[in-house]
Amino acid sequence: MTESYDERYARAVRNANAAPAWQDTFDPTQDASPELADPPERPRQFWIVLFLTLSLLACVLGAVFIPGGMGFIAGYQQLQAQDHELAIQHFNRGLGYLADNYPELAYAEFQIAVKYDSSYAPAQQQLSALQAKLGGQGTPGAQPEDRVAATLFQQASDLVKQKQWSDAITRLEQLQTLKPDYNKAQVSSMLYQADVASGTQAVAAGQIELARERFDAALAIQGGDAAVTRQRDLAQLYLDGQQAAGYDWQTAIQKFSALYQQDSNYFDAKKRLIDAYTQYGDLAGKQNAWCLAVSEYDKALAITQDASLADKRVQAMTLCKQAISATPTPAVGGQNYTSSKPVAANLPCTGIGDVSGVVRDALGNPLAGVAVGYYADGIPLIATRTNANGQYQLVWGKDPGLFHVAVLEADGKTPASPVVDVNYPGGNAAGCHVLIDWQKVQ
Image (cartoon, rainbow, N blue to C red; front, side):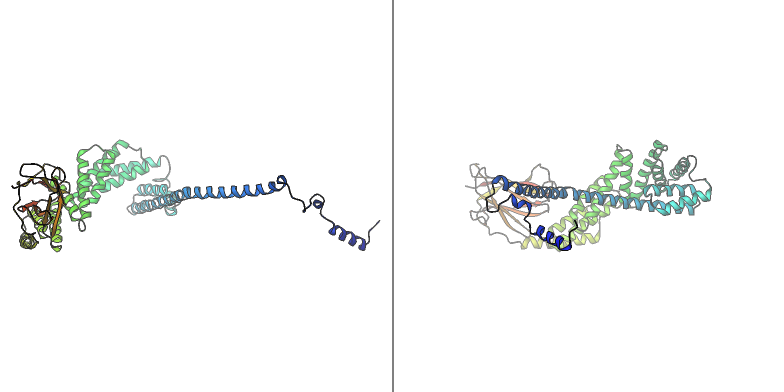
């Protein structure tokens, strides 16, 4: 029997007003038992804890691996950029060989360029053009690399005989890049010879950076050659001194002095050392350290006799004497102590020196707590006290000077002995450790 529209409408209303099925089994007025209340809550807490744990783990792993990954990507990109630059260099060499009518060498360069950067279109285009133009000669065919390698080897051999070292090195390096195993022993021998000769030639021309690179390359082939190692070390001393010149004259002096002592004829090492002494003396004069300036000028004059430098030395000596006489001298106290003659201890001098000794009473027993001090040009009185064994030590720096040492009264200011003058040579010079003992007078 078919329902009318009104009947269908009434049935829909009754169904909408009917209570849900779950209301027949659940009474909201009754307390829920723990067994029924907890289970819905536990899964939600579990998933929240799991989510937070995974998030923390992801952060930790990201902090560890993302920087490393980024570093790897950056390094890979840098390597690609370097390979692309090398591809361009070899491509340009190939163009030069084409212009000089050396198609095989041009092909070799284009091939090396493609090895460095397989996507470098200009090199690929030139390779294709050579193939089409030459119909196989000097281009890929039966053992093409051997033909090109033979050409490079022959040219390198001729250049070695002509002592055209830089060009020979270029050909040999091209050969090694194209075909590393081709006449390997002979190629290494020729490359070693060319590197050493080119390095020596570079030193004579004042190209010290290039010389060091050549000697390093030679040692990479044959590392046990003492003569080549020495030449590399001399070049390094020169470069270190050159780098320090202008802002650290003491280091520059140290490097050029070591170089000059090992080889006084090494390029312009003598001139560099004289200039370093002079410039350091000039700097000391600008800082009113005239006694130090005199010392540096003296070292330069020991190497060369220069009238203008001698005049500088005379002027600096005059000002040095004035500075010493103008240095405030502590008031003279009693003659309560006598001193031994200053002597140099046989100890190494590596930049720091000192004056040390023992203070004793009239019977020769050590005296503790006695003040000993020194002053110098521009340096006010500096004092220390003896230990339980009567020993004292006053540390001096690397700069030379005329220092005045004395035992002091209990106030730590007034000399209780005659002042002993010490010509301190500096912390790097022999005699930098000075010994002076004192004994009380009855």
